[in-house]
Length: 395
Image 1 (tube, one colour):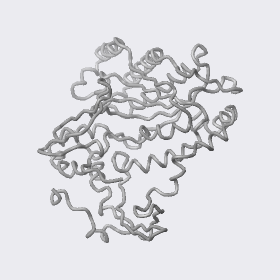
Image 2 (cartoon, rainbow, N blue to C red; image 1 turned 60 degrees about the vertical axis):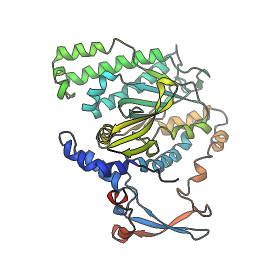
Image 3 (tube, rainbow, N blue to C red; image 1 turned 45 degrees about the vertical axis):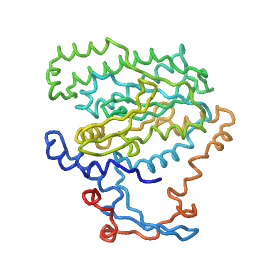
Image 4 (tube, rainbow, N blue to C red; image 1 turned 60 degrees about the horizontal axis):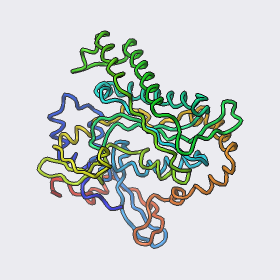
């Protein structure tokens, strides 16, 4: 894949230093660590290796990646490895995509309590899906799914939501049969939204009374119990958004579908258009007007501020499994699901196509298409003379 003409790393090299100087009130060590990792990613500063084609002998030098999960350049290989690990868990049935979104009133509180509120978002959305699916009036089955946290919208604003990819069916309560959902309908979104709202607000109240919530800046008045209770009542004035797509296909479609959601960062390098006169221009999709592609221009400092809003707390797990895919139950219940679904072995084997075909090599020879192998490790000192030019000189 060709290098995009503009990358987030170029923007950080251009304006990262001034940003640190003018934003010391809120910039912390994690922000600095991520910015440094992005600027050093795939440069001589991290060392590299020489690869050689096993077929034609073509040789090339590659720089090492930073492997930071917030770096736009490091997510392709991580996504591929994750998809390879998930292949054997895909059931021969259709899947459903469900999205739980926090209302905009909660976004400022979530920024000040990232770990707590993101955990609550995972927990309450999962409990909602499991409870409604278990209800005999809806599906009457124990479902399995994984959830992925995203905290941004197309304009890089703070927009916490979780994407849940759910098998369109589940185990009967006695684990003797598989119950499939309807082809065009999974679970009622209005019921999901109201149950999700009730569970999340109840969890917020518990966190407040236990002293786990932090309030800073303009949220300081919410420290008072009466003010907080009054603020919570506002959250019940409208329904919370839960979006559910109809079942989108079986395991042969799931792997391609998942790659667009599992390892995304706030913005990819391919959406960047220009960096000029202290402004950054990037593409965004306007979902309110038929997903029309538009351009947005921000001051470079505002662009980096929005990008840094979406850093996750250290050690935070952003992909989680629930139901019969939960870590404690997967080994016992997943084989049972395969047994209950007829011809699971044949369908599962047929679905190992797009990812497995490229599982042996993450980079093919640009000359003959053969497999590239590492033949030499190179230190940063050895690569010093081969490093990419500094941004100031390149400009």
